[in-house]
Amino acid sequence: MLIVLMSLAIAHAEPAAVDETCTHDRAALLALSPADFDQDMSGGWRPLGEKPECAELAADLLADYRKARWGELTPGELHLNYWHEGQLRAGLAQTDAATRLMMAGVNPEMSRSGFSDYALGTIAFLHKDRAGLLAARARLAELPKPPDFDDAARRFKAQYGLELKWPPNLSVLDGLIACFDRPYNEAYGACSADEGPPAERH
Image (cartoon, rainbow, N blue to C red; front, side, top):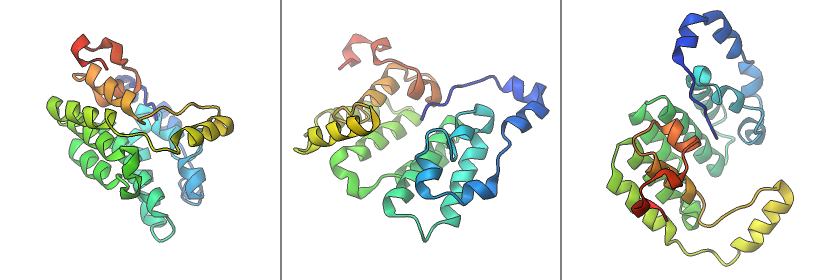
């Protein structure tokens, strides 16, 4: 999920345009299946979440969907919903809320994927804990690759045309390290690990 930062001045200068930009059919979105609401890259909550002026509305929508569909969501879908709301809250500098949501987004069933270290590294970044971020990055980098990963990656690429790398999300933590002093949205979405000091490049 990449959220490009825009000037808040636009929101104040042109409120009518912003209202139109964030217009959505809330009832229709809440009626979507979990896959259509969350995994459709051009649908569900994402078109709102990609617009800075609509990000808080998108975060609220994720929370509303979770509450409305609580009994229907699988554990994996529930964890993912928490995580995505947490990312949006992080982009809004709502650090305490983002921390709680991201911790709730860690799925214990994904322990082999290193997602917990990715989450801890992200939270360390939000709290300006450089040592914690570097430690999480080191743990993630040392995570052994599951024996079935290469086969799964080939199937994923054949189906979606995207390449999976092991360990997942390592490049994201590298970007957070490289752009440690920048806002979350910039560090997550646009920073390259090559921008960091040589000692921190892996």
